[in-house]
Image 1 (spheres, helix red, strand yellow):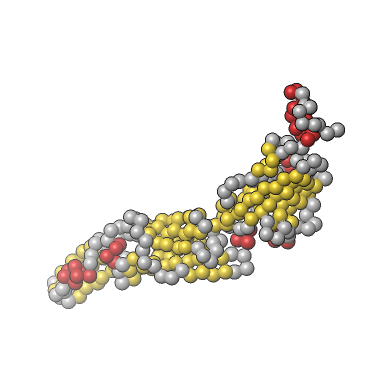
Image 2 (image 1 turned 120 degrees about the horizontal axis):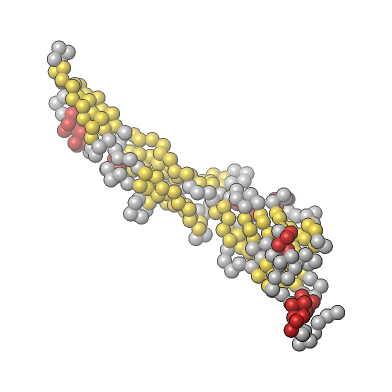
Length: 274
């Protein structure tokens, strides 16, 4: 029998609340960030925490209403599930008893960055919550491609970002450095970004650290690389074969003019820089 408002004794208030099926479906107020390849929880719950085991719980894409995950009559029904979500969605069955209708999404893909809706229907009421998912890429991988003629070439790469992602190089003081244009590539599942920067010899004297920052939709990931000092091993040979004179220098902060001064007038020399 239905409980009428105001007819519930204090001791049976909770039972009456369940009977009248008065509940809210509550989701997050802010977007949920997910990293490509990792698992994600789309949070949603009933308030108060009444059981959802006997209810219909339907997760869909907000834009198209296509089924992501359907639960009814105490069991999952994935016959109408979008193929892209096959074997990647899970409800927490034990948590349903406590009103937790959150959805676990495994192995997040770039295409999962959408708005989702969770519809809940019981005998006497219904409700809905929305979850906006923002997919961000992996942590940047920074490496040195080479050191040549007093220049260090560095490259920063990351996958899982969208085409509008920003890739920036910063010095140890947070100043944005001039870098090559962003390179982007899309394959069947991932979208990757790459950007190179060249550090001049004069900059490497500072023994600095550089940071690569990739950002999209107010979400940012960074990685730092230490740039070693530019140094040269100088071997000078003077005199002749009978009376040779060998001099060895190591210059940790050598500019080109200073190297020229050291080597000036020597007939034979070997210069190794790195």
